[in-house]
Image: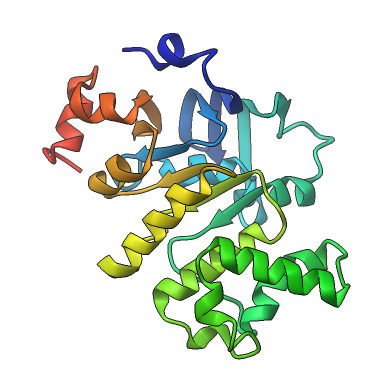
Length: 261
């Protein structure tokens, strides 16, 4: 079953990769990736360690360029605009495309200041407006009731799961369109993981979500579409139920059934 033929025209394409090749220096990490990410859906990226999953996700907000010498061939379109064009404003791109990392990384500031950090950078300094943004963002991440009486206490006092939800709230505070999540539950216990998965299900009503995960069960639970990467190549991409019950490629079946990886 070909995702291009079966779904095209039924969903709005938010992000499109056209023969995307990504290099760290002379090392090619992604090799000719072509795929589409659909608006208000969750797409899981799966594959063994070192296959290019995190690089693929980080290429969508160009965050890898902060600390690495990178080169890109092909196109990566966000709302039909190539984000690697020279006229792209990186600050605006990273506002539109938020990111949550593998381990919770709250700033050593108060809960309030963590969420207000991005809006302040964008020039919002009105206290009433910031109060509303903080409450809205924490509420959307199911953290408001747990944090409302300790907003001005250090975020470092939150549990790991609460810290990760705070990091999601911090990303949402600047009103993004896309949310990238790079193994957001790998450092969390099962209870906290379940809360994050419930949150993802709710957030997809408002955002396009792309999640990297090494957990096959998690990919099956939370995503609408799944892409399988191996050695920097996209082996298969389809509706999640098809990937997990009727994969087109033998290597995909071998991976999701645990024969390697």
